[in-house]
Image 1: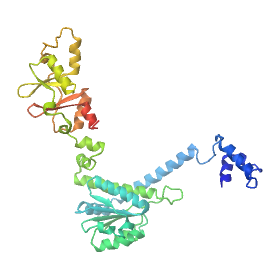
Image 2: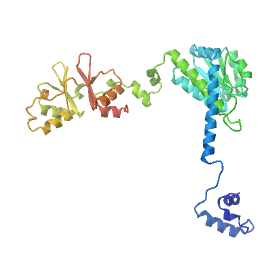
Image 3: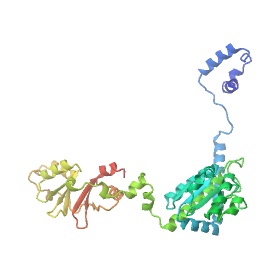
Image 4: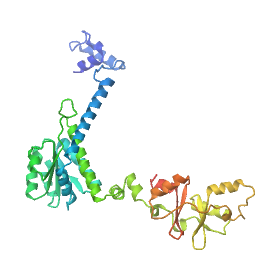
Length: 370
């Protein structure tokens, strides 16, 4: 086998003096050739660009046709399936074997993250004890392209005897599973994208799309919002963007940079240095916001020889009506406000314009909002 492989890789090994009858010569030649870099790749007529492109386009076209056929199958069975899942007081239990099992896992995950509690049960494990995970409050969604999967046919009669609603998704409307279901979702395809018409390709795509159709139809029926979605994705970027509020990340209390209206520029410099947010609020006796003084304002003051930092009142150089935000707003709104107005810090105020917090772009970065 080694000689056969090397003979293809290095044609010189096909010489008649190299054979198992002359092991020393063979070993010497192998060592020499092993140290020689491969300069001539093995020619493969199927690895040309035109063939690869043709194959890829055929797969996409075949699977697109399979998806298009599903439009006519959004019928009373689909409505019944949605009703059973929507009214389910428990969870949707999704099951399938082989490639259908992989699709079933994805459908369960999509349902769970879009407002329909769901989980996957392996049908082989179900017949060895995991059937106890399914209760009378649940709905079962079973996937099988043939509709004759032995592992499902073993457990589904038990499920039916318990009165648990059964939705089946198959590629064979006349199959045993299709006849058992309270609702049958037809995901049959005329052909697989595989040139041998064997590997599950178009059929698994059709099942996946039908599962997505169920999940999104239920999402809309439940009035599921982006905040609901974020609650099931708290660790992701989306969760942080939709769940994190200004109050969660702002500096508050004594950490807010603020000075009174009678303060000088040097007082502002000291406060900005102490609090480290690149700005300070100017407030009245009731902590109502009068204006803001930023490090940019400070740099311009230093460049002006006519300004005395020790005696010039900060109110003469502060910016009035600065951009502010409320504590109950989402942190992502602060990021958007900063980006739109090319600023790096914001003051947080309440309904009476009292300063209750402050934050800058670094706080948003630390919170991984931006």
